[in-house]
Length: 338
Image (tube, rainbow, N blue to C red; front, side, top):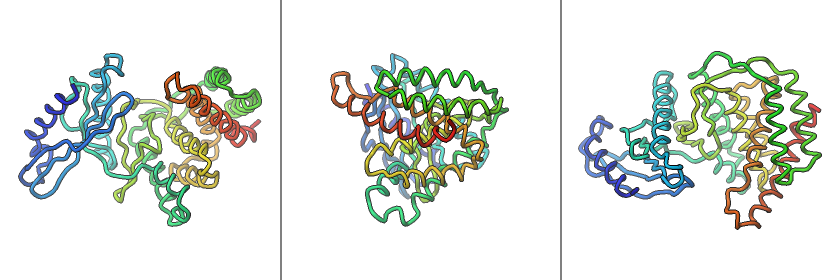
C-alpha cells in the first residue's frame, strides 16, 4: 500500500516540480532514498534532482492499522494545521516551518519540504557524553534559539487570554497522581506534588495567555541548523490553547532526560534557564509553569513505557527509574512552594 502511494507522490512531484521550485533549472529526477518507520506512520525521504541542485522532501504516510482506520482523517487534520502554521510563518516572517507540497490526505499522507538540522536532544546528549562539547556554547545557543522561536510562534498566533480554572487543574493533578500511584509513585512524592501545586494555583490568575499550541514542541522535534530553529511536527497543533502548555511540555521533556545517569542536573538546568530567559518568562510565569510541567511529567509516567505487555522486565525498569526521577523533580519544583 505505502509503495503504491509513494509511486503516486513521486509522479506528482515530477509533474509539478517546476511549479513547486520555479527558481531551479531543468528537473532531472525524483527518487525515494529511504524511509523511517514510526509507531503509527512512516517517514519517506525523497530527493528532487535539478540540473543546478537538489531539494529534499518528506512524506509522512499514516499506517491504517495503527490509526484506527482514520489515516485519511489524521492526514487531513495535520495538513490543515501545517498550512495554518506555514501561512502564519510567511506573514510574520518566521522561519522553520516546512512548506506543504500538494494534497495527498485522501491517501493518508502529508508531504512537505524536509527541514535540515540536528535535533536539540542529540545536542544535549552529546554535551552530556562528550567532555568539553558544551564548552563551545552550542547547547546554550540552541536552547536560546528554541525559546525565541516558540515566543515568536506564540506571538504570531496570539489569541485573547483564556479563562483558567486552577481548582479544575488541581483535581486533574490528583487523578494523575492516583494513576501514577498504581505505577509505583510513593505517597511522599504525591503529597509533595499536590501540596505544592495547590499553593501555587491558589495564587494563579483567572486568565492565561492563549495562542496556537503545538503540543509536540520537544527536544526531538526541535531541529537546530545554521539558519536557526526548525519544527517539523504539527500533527497535534491546536488553534487556541494555553501558551504555557508548549513551554511546560518542552521543560518537562528536557527535565526527563535527567533520568539518564550521564545527564547531570547542571546541564539540564542550563538548558532550561536559557530557554526560559529567551522565551521571556517572568518569575510569576515560572511558578505556574512548574505546575504545568509537573502535569506533563505525571502524564509521561502514567502512560508508562511504550513496550509490549509481555516485556514485563522493561516496564518494571521504566517505572523504577521514573518514580525516582519524579520524586526528585517534585523535591526541586514543589517543596519550596509547600
